[in-house]
Image 1 (tube, helix red, strand yellow):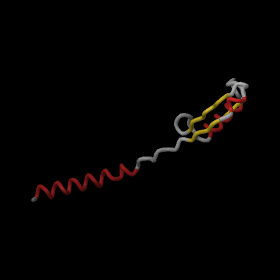
Image 2 (cartoon, helix red, strand yellow):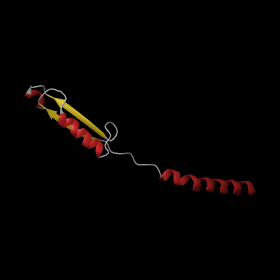
Image 3 (spheres, one colour):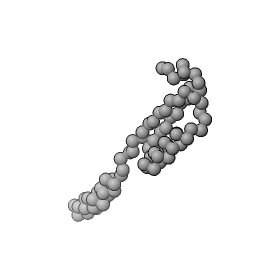
Image 4 (cartoon, rainbow, N blue to C red):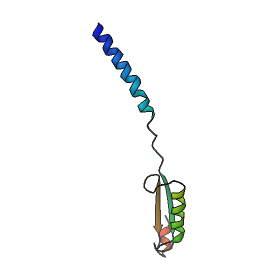
Length: 82
C-alpha cells in the first residue's frame, strides 16, 4: 500500500513539473502566399526587389512565413489567361 502511495505522489509531482512545458509551445505560424503575374520576361525587376525588402523589414521570411510566386508571360498574353 505504501509503495503505491509513493508511486502516486511521484506521478503527480512529475505531471505538475511537466505541464508548464507543454503550454509554452508556440502555435504554427501561417504561411502567406503572394503571387505576381507579369507580361514580360523574368529579368531583374527593381520593384520586386524593393517589395521583397519591405516584406523582410516587416518580419516576413521567405520560405518560412511567406511564399512569393512570380509568373511571367514573356510577351505572350495568352499565357496569362486561365
